[in-house]
Length: 459
Image (cartoon, rainbow, N blue to C red; front, top):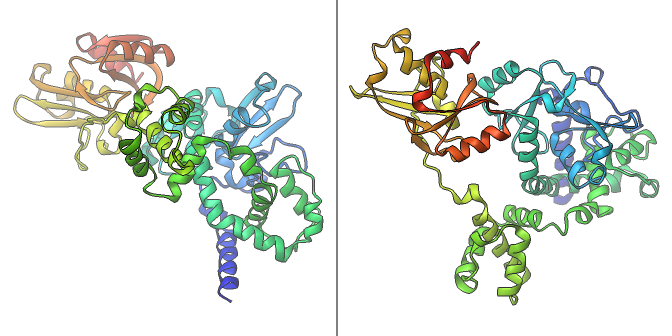
């Protein structure tokens, strides 16, 4: 009785979640969505099966040289097909990559789009949201409302690729918690199992479309129930999740770390106890770590090897090893130039302390320089010589650094909360590397930054 009640509850939860698409930012009506695929499964993402109009504002697509399209619910699914799926060995067949512009709901050239990454608006298939805009001013407006950072397509693609294993683990956890059980219940109670088992499909989208269009299950299944059914069939019954990801050590590490909150701690204990000679910083990849463990500590159990591997890889990762020393911004601090709350944009924060002890925080170095050069324009009677301490945030490390000793990149395609920015770095080498990768036009020392240059950024 309790088991039946539990399964009924699972179905009801999924039904409610998908029957209320107006609750999701991504959703548009089917008639408002541009569907580029022309096959019977045109409504569904070929990679994960999700309903494209329901996640339309994060839709991406590839146009192939033969004129056909593959349309995805998210950049995550685009990256998966490009790096692991059907397009892995066929990048040369891709004529164009497209993304939905949030503002116009039209597809645009993804490589020319501006992405807001990490906003408070929920994303699709990723813990970190990614929304594309054709115009940088639209991206900045969205960012100023919902937070996040403006990135290029290439940056967003690489961030998605970097987070891929972690996101797959998150997706698997969510599916295992509810969707697979719900899908199995629907399969056994609402479907003609013999006919469903006989379906031959090349993708989960095709499987989902065939079940719906051939009416292989009871009428009245909503998209949430159909998705749960398709996921159970594709991932579990056909074993595609295990086939695709079962031998991926990085995904296995994240899957286990979700299940076991002490996963990394146990790996640390194993390292200290029996494998201390392994130096995490000496490895360049997860494969090297795995080989090092097999050589140095071959008698460990598989689960202990995985924990140790996860811990060493966690320590090896540069951004995880570095403990940043950021500017600490009071929650009520407002930029004296634009009036915005600076704590909302900690990665761009700048700070000055005057000789009279007065302190100011800014939501970017551009506004900081504006205030240094023209404090009187913002109702403060200071000159440039009155600024005793000047601190900015290093773009790469987020460390608080001496603004008078920093190097500033001008003219890059990276935008801050107030649009065009002077991007600060502690070292010239970092500034040169950034400038090379993001189309920087100049690298300036503090004393080389002029009033005309700073105010000219807004033109």
